[in-house]
Image (cartoon, rainbow over all chains, first blue to last red; front, side):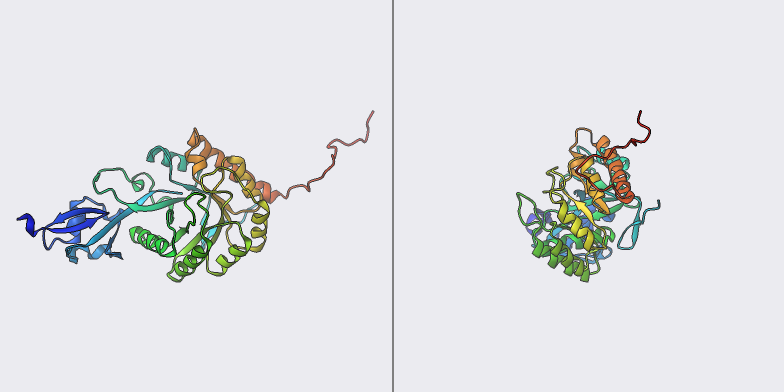
Length: 72
Length: 257
């Protein structure tokens, strides 16, 4: 695939390039994220984790993936 | 004497000690301290996953949320919107509705921003969250939080992580008198005796993080806190003697030779 066809997205503040028609589920698999331990936001909207296969990522999408860490 | 149950939002917890999971040297040390403390509830924070280090250990690998109640917090939030966003995400991770609200107003002293805290309590309660609220030790504000639907009032003893112990016992006692909600001292305790004092004031429980995590021996301090909470509670229930300015001999003078 020509690099010009790639789409720029932002994941947790870091830029990433993906191929067109890449789903949110593919991204989670690529990043090896355990679904039962994370929550996902797409453009500040919380995503139902059961529906991520149906969501195609678009140019400029901002994704946040969070989990629990130690805190008081 | 049978004590009344420690109940938050209709759920009973055996231990009156709630433990934070931050500032430990490692997850394994944290897990060991929690186990030793006997706590049934631990606070946790919501943060970005490190996408560059996919194999990094996770808190949930060490502390099983099926065995211990996770209490997601809003640490680092400065507005109601930040807090609501954070807790919605926490709920999405695993369905948690019991949450600890903490909306700060100043990065240095970490005091709660009470106007935003009150607004957040109202909004989160409307959304179905059971909100345990970190607050200042102001009885009037505690009353307003209660009216807004808080399920527990959690006044600070002193600034977060300061280890100064309870600075205003009078206010804590007044809050105790006025509320039937669980009253839990959150923030500022430094050692086991501070925990006992909180319990002797009639608090239902305490929340400790730094005092355990940053002690030279966190596991030993976790154990000390466990016993201090039990001891303080029993002391409160037993009905202490009235303080007296003058002495009162323990031995009778009857039969003195």
